[in-house]
Amino acid sequence: MAEGTIPGPGTAIVTGASRGIGAAVAYAAARAGYGVVVNYSTDSEGAQKVVSDILAQGGRAWAVQADVSRPDDVVRLFDESTGWGPLTAVVNNAAITGNLIGPLVDVPAETVQRVVDVNVAGMIFMCQEAARRLSTGNGGSGGSIVNISSTATKAGSPGTWVHYAATKGAVDVLTVGLAAEVAQQGIRVNAVAPGSTNTGLHAAAGMPDRVERLNPTIPMGRGAEPEEVAAAVLWLMSSEAGYITGAVLPVSGGR
Image (cartoon, rainbow, N blue to C red; front, side):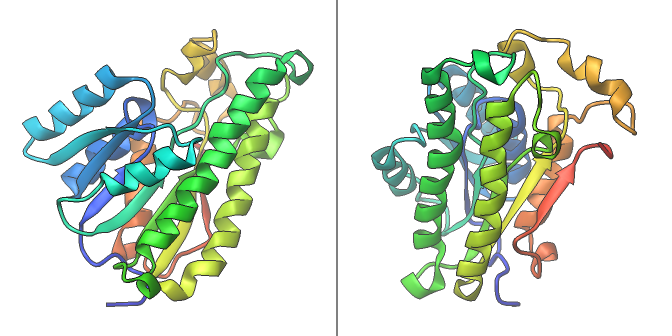
């Protein structure tokens, strides 16, 4: 087995997995043979549906509530993610926009703080704990961390989500830096950067047709489906990507 590859499907934690890209990753991981921890913060109903769907298809999954912006919750999430093989993959998908669209100057301070707490601090807390648990130097089995970034980092999302785009820029830096730190510990760290994707994120922010509006700016002429993003995540988790670390892979239709 090449150093840094996943030693077979074990347990995968997927944060923010009650809907959208996170749910698509959870379904794909279950089909690949992982026991899937479906993490959620507030959407218990959505998380339980994802778990029920996976179980109905013969997979293994269970839901764990945890707010990734709270360090104690993060430790508890990992503590409760045992039972079906060693932890081998962590997908850090949980992120918020603050459910608004508009110029940066109009974003309330409390919204900025919450978005940074979840998207940046939460991502860091998850990466810290994942590195501790996966490290072969600490008795872990090694494995893969995949962070969900965004192609919003390219243009900065002016007029819509500058605050959100800024947090995703932090995710890219975190991915590259941590990858170099833990490469000798059997851990690969990569990111997937979706472009415009057909999820409920846009509707929640008050612009349900945002993906459709952006289609003319995308070379492929359409937004991504969550399953297409999930496929990239699962590839980075797999041994086929065993010599890839520190990469930020765009899934953007060329935009």
